[in-house]
Amino acid sequence: MFLRFFIGILGGSFVPCQVWTTAFFDKNVVGTANALTGGFGNAGGGITYFVMPAIYNSLMKNQHMTRHVAWRVSFVVPGILIVTTAVAMLLFCPDTPTGKWSERNQVRDTTLQNHQMLGVVDASAIGNISAEKRMDYSDSSINENEHQRPLNDDKKDILPPPANTHFGDHEAHLTPQQMMDTAQGEIIRKPTPKEIARVFSSPQSWVTGICYFCSFGAELAINSILGSYYQRNFPKLGLQQSGNWAAMFGLVNVVFRPLGGYFSDVAYKASGNNVWAKKILLHTYALITGCFLIAIGVLNPKDKSTMFGLIAGMAFFLDGGNGLNYALVPHVHPHANGVISGMTGAFGNLGGIVFAIVFRYNLTQYGRSMWIIGVMTIGLNLMVCWIKPIPKGQIGGR
Image 1 (cartoon, rainbow, N blue to C red):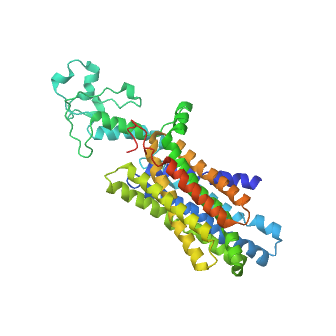
Image 2 (cartoon, one colour):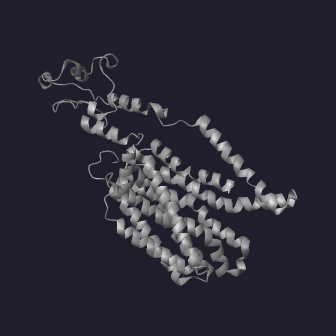
Image 3 (cartoon, rainbow, N blue to C red):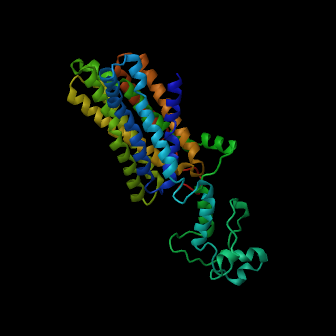
């Protein structure tokens, strides 16, 4: 129980990993980035199927340990890998692309100033502005360090420039207020309990949660029974070969999940940065996954080629759906990305529990459980497919 407790904490590191990756990449490539890191994480489950039994058998054969002792000692190997990774991250990895996490607001302010947020203003336009505020709209030739105050975190303290202000920004074609609002909406901040409740109750948050419930939840549950399913339908495979084939279902995450994120980014850019493109693709993957699950359950193949082919097709869309989901998450509530990432991840684990119960109550009727999960996947996605991907009125996230 002690060991499993810390393994559970380790599994929880998936969410901060996705939040961290989101902070490093722009929204037109964040799907690929999140899916790549997530895919490696999921593939670790497949690698474990191969590595841990090999270590265990080696300790018994070469070190002459008993079964009980060898199993416990085998955990030393992943323990060393985990600690080494953690230390390397602390020593060599920066908090954000621009440096320390605590300085992210100052970096934003500097960036806005570099985009000539404080431009040249007609004298007639500032007649009613106080002398102190006029310094903010002084001529851009004046030294910024001497005359321009840093932008305040609180939007209430930021005076919007007059309508006829002239700007010379060389990148973004946005009004100053739009630029400020976008920056405010994109910067992650410590959420209040009220904001957390708002994110949890948002229909958009439930979309990502329910979709991940279906995709990652199904993956967890299927991973736990797939070896037994293969052994039941193909007794000649034996325990080792059934486990090896089951491990492939986890290993393909290293390819299929990143592909899902990549296709999401391609659709996003091809649609002119329309978040709906990501959402439509996510539901499409989910519906196809449900069809594959129903086909596997109804056919319950006794031919290895048919079974492995259907499982591979299902894995392509199931794992790709995981990548697509975390390609959409960064858009929904960017100021509370940690909260929604955690909520979405928790729904995935909840899905694993619910679908495991489906398998448990159907005992060895694995095919029946498969088509039940397929029907649930299709039904739940149809239930939320009409919801807008971004809350109404939200500036950030696009």
